Length: 201
Image (cartoon, rainbow, N blue to C red):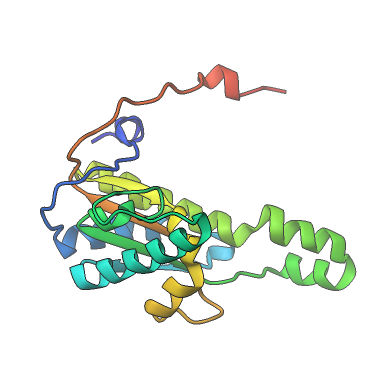
């Protein structure tokens, strides 16, 4: 599939068929992610590919418990929410990131703390690279015929999920990608025209 066709074909999928995903396909997605640009070529991310139903069910239970506690409502066992829908996919990809600090960051930390703060928490080069890796992962998944949903909703239970997945500081869980063969694809929302989002100077 042409890269432009893949980008246009990709959409967030929230209903999946149950058929398993070969490990070789997940590794191809991860390989695509490994070629993403990262600050200082830090390659500061890795993936935990969860396919065991027992583990996925445990993750869902953790998320449902926190969501119920926060919202004060009860989560139905068969209901997918914006926080737990990953549990309805055959593969759950947990994106783990490590901090990145460049020479520029170290200089600003010492010489200009206010600029350092803005760079670390607004610009955040390390997180930008991880996002690029996620983008290439989900584009590769689309090219292989899979649907994905890039999720941060489950991170309502971030510390609890990190504990369950044995993710230790300074690494942290930054996103979850639900992956599987699409069972139903919603209508694609319209996109802004290139001329609308681009200015030339």
